[in-house]
Image (tube, rainbow, N blue to C red; front, top):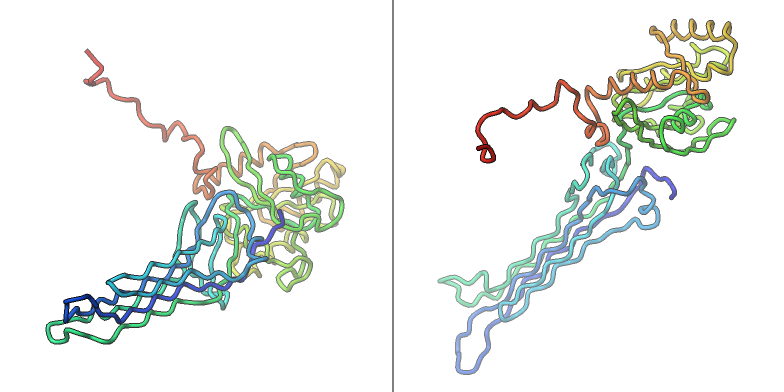
Length: 358
């Protein structure tokens, strides 16, 4: 399945049906009176968050969605049928923006959530509606209201508890493949990862979702490399895991490069909780590792964790640190569904009277 996280679509709700001007014509009835029916209501355009989707690729091939118009009123007091609604299915985590790409209309964060983005027009009244004590034979009826039409942007932002950030080739995809069942593409060249990946991580009986995004390089906020458009997928994350390659020239400079790109993003991500880890420690000498750790400690102003995705050294400690932070405010349903701790467990039932006791 191809990955697409942004799409522009045109929507239009159904027009309301027109009211009818008609009179009862029957043998031996001289003054039958008006019996024109009302028009039917136009269909709505509804957006629904569904399970089983992780891309907006369907909206690359169809961009126009129009709801059905309401039926017109008819004689013999027959009202027009209501138009059928049209439902756009999107993944959980999708945001709906107006055509200006800035005005947020709705944010889908729950499965099954629905939002009416365009309401159908009301049907017009037939002439039977206008009959009164002073006007027994009205010859006017209302036209139906036109439906709403607009262009909207759909932007998907993955819902994950933790996000992996770092320079290209820092070992993010390898780390994700080791700690979860995800199978991202892994190779020894930059920008191997071209779109975000998700993996479910199990640590000490707890579960959380980890997101891997393409690497950031200097000037990514200006569009260099793959740009910073994928940073939107870690906006919802509770914590960021910043991996720094121990085999690079200067770990401190590599760390600052990514931090500058996080700060230059449209919604500043530097305020998120961050765990810094020095990766690929099995590929360097102890002396070089000591120097890189000191450089990274000065730049990050915290002691970095040492980890290796290949040898799995230090991986359990990193996962445990992530799980402890996520448990304070989980984001994904996986993390929210984790078993309660002993402190949060429900107290045992009292030994009082019950219908089953004798």
